[in-house]
Length: 354
Image (tube, rainbow, N blue to C red; front, side, top):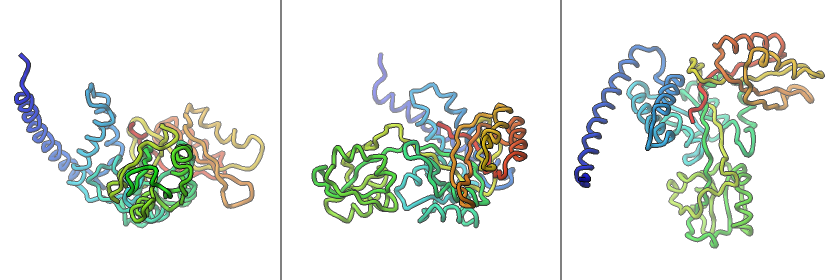
């Protein structure tokens, strides 16, 4: 005989009671670990290992992403018992940067919205924030130039990365799409949604602003205006979501870096980020990258940017697989140091858990 609704709910209640007890046990163990270890409570390599193990052990019906989000919040709550850490991000509230902070650190971590990427770097460098989250590249629009420029000069290290799917929506005080006469958004979001806007709102004026959250704030004050941005901004500014997923590329993704005063230890699946340059001569770049191939180190990203120190001189931003403490990576870095005219190791960190 099939179980009744009341019986099924009773079983769920019993499981919830067990979960409360188990979570309390986990929190007590986390506090004991916090007393034993030196430094802050955030250990990016350990948290990445926990999430990978949980996803690997998952047999459903919950999806891996959903389970990872649940455990991120559990880790965040346990971490808060040990340390009152703060994370700076490119604000204001309602931006994709804030969403990246929540995805990586959990909702119980204190965060500080900043007016610019420069301010995020400054807060980490001066210690007024323990960590910072900055966008570094978008799968559609490419690298974030200001972040790359600041990485060249900062003493801060990279201790993590966040890969965030970008889901844009159109929000407005209006309840109908045909009432929209003006659209506010960040220039990069406009670029990511230009085909959709051209099809659905061809006559609407497009007004670039400093952030998607600012766009939502302006749209909330003006009749006939709308904003393109993340869905959480609609709730913050009490706007109606007129259309969701308005980005032209459904796989649109932004990658963020986590800044810290220190490196992360090896996690078993890591990346290392470098900045380097070489002499301006035929074959120089090939020679510069030879140590990576010779030591079987895979390169996942290569980005060039003017060095600002001389005409037609460039620096190269390179991401490689592996931790700087891995034997083959350490050998490659030692050889690169001999070949490069400039080499800066930004840090090794766990690859994003996806």
